[in-house]
Length: 79
Image (cartoon, rainbow, N blue to C red; front, side):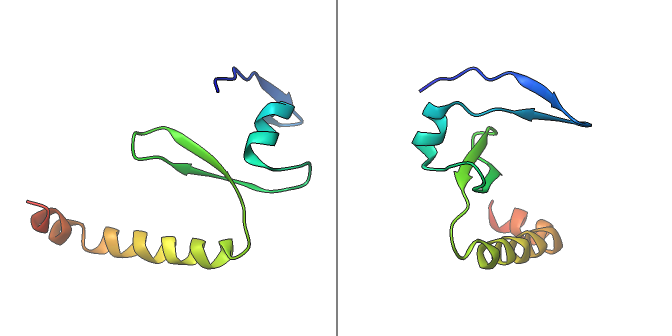
């Protein structure tokens, strides 16, 4: 599915309006939350926020902290 979206001014921000087809594909409705994450190929991925997302966010923050602190060690181990 390829859908071209327009950026629109919403107050002092810029937003994207998701068409019904995209919302149906994501299985979301008005008022639901979505999460935007980096994909391995450099693109961005939208996923619906599910129960337990706070715990997942904490785990990802902890992992990013470890990666930052041990960047050089991890780089050497990857060789």
